[in-house]
Length: 258
Image (tube, rainbow, N blue to C red; front, top):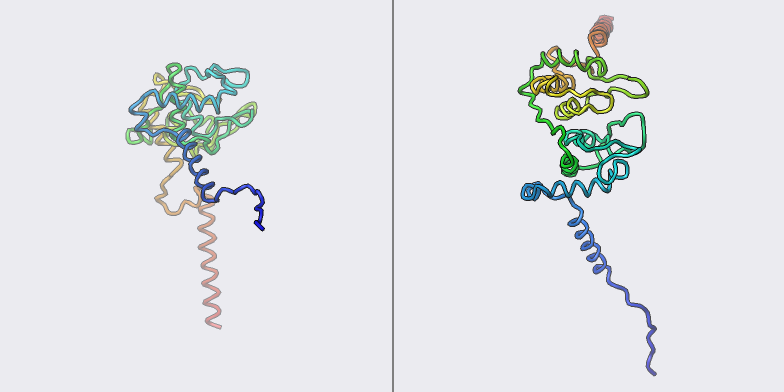
């Protein structure tokens, strides 16, 4: 008697399914991965096209399909590449939720995508370009004078920031790069005024950026800075260590004599 086999559906091998998944991932990566700088150099409009695609997905819901702005966000026409590089590069944009001021956070986009977004917005209308900040051209002492005259009222002389009105604040400059300092001065984000080249030329911007860099990475020729809190806590530590050492030495000598 011939045995009748049950009609069970044949399962595809696990290896074959894994291969299909890898092929699908490769296709998706090829479709959505950011294009290289070399490809953008060959086709100058490629960065603009890629930037527009990114803009439509991540920015158009607030700024409009053509970046003309709306009830929730301003127009981006004419803001230039510097504004986009600053806002997106510092993670302030895209904004997760409405607030009195956009806070700095980890950027959502990588460097290539930020450059593409900046290229697209810059293609809409002329605006401030991303500045080339040259710290070697800056004068540290002069930058300190300019900073105290133009910036310390809000950011404090130490660059630690401070409160403003209506829930706004001048941010701490501890994480600001020289390029971001130049971008902020040329574009005036949030409550910050715009410093045009007629007000502060490139050498002056370089000098201020050099001073901010010095604030963020100060040299301490006198020894360990102990957090750069100033002479009072540093002197207190010296007294405690010195007197404490003397007390320990005295007790040790006394115990040896007895």
